[in-house]
Length: 269
Image (cartoon, rainbow, N blue to C red; front, side, top):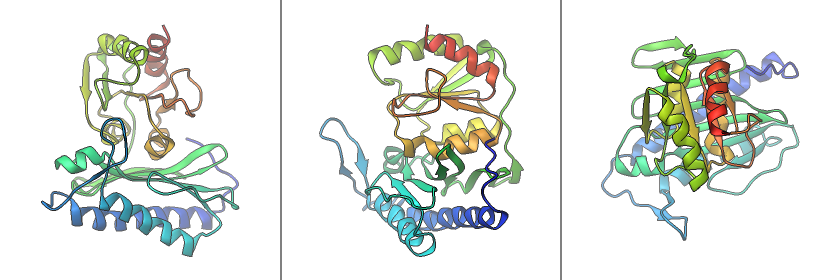
């Protein structure tokens, strides 16, 4: 877990309060639209289908409006609107609905992602699933999930060998042809491979249910909150070269350093 010694106790409390408040407001807004027959989507992509709904835009705007009032010195990076520069050194990273395709399809594995980052990267994040009522929070000394079973600590599991591991990725057709071949090397070595969970797969990793999530083609708003939550739960998140997650879009999230090293070796083979 990253240790931010330059943030006061009062500011830590404010950041935690705010990230919960944003997730609360996002729950209300997303559930107004989820599984409603009138929900439609615009396509942001000229090549394929990259949907955005009224709920995506509304949630991000709600959070941006709150930040403009409460922390105008902080920066903002979001999926749906342009960046806001920081003068405080902190930036909020927002994916209002991670898994809009799932949202449109009525499946409950999409989520609201909000993170706070400094020049070292994301250090506080929330993965919230409004329909199930689960909230995963990690960072600033917190690593917990609140949901139907109450509140429990998050802790990644201790699987050490790939033959015992469960690996997830959102799309079977992951990335480029070369990236797909690299992923298949890891998948073939693992006990079980599953697809299609969007951000919820990262939440399951932090919860200790699975061992690896490997993806390509991600943006920072896709991974910032999961990164903070998983690191708080004792896991490891890097790019496919073992470096800090950057602009390549490649991400490997692992339950512990040992399983991370074994998967990384096959990705780069």
